Length: 120
Image (cartoon, helix red, strand yellow):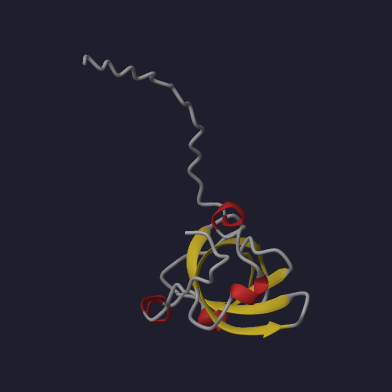
């Protein structure tokens, strides 16, 4: 018995987007995913007297990097993207206020913790 197998090839074109923007990198997280030591990419939204208002891309979350938690070796201006570690959170049921650090020791001790709903 001669069995002939036929394979059809299908071309699939997918769009690949690479991004470092916090809303793309962290957009799948919710404010309750944030914990002390959590590592995130953040963009400087504005420079204030006592620190930096940061965009971490997590809905319903406000983030602030105080100047005393900022790495003096990194110049931060509006639009700069940097790695940060969560120092503290003030969560409520609907939103969170997050204090950040980008000191090297905070980043080295930071951890990425996945919840079942958090994408890779």
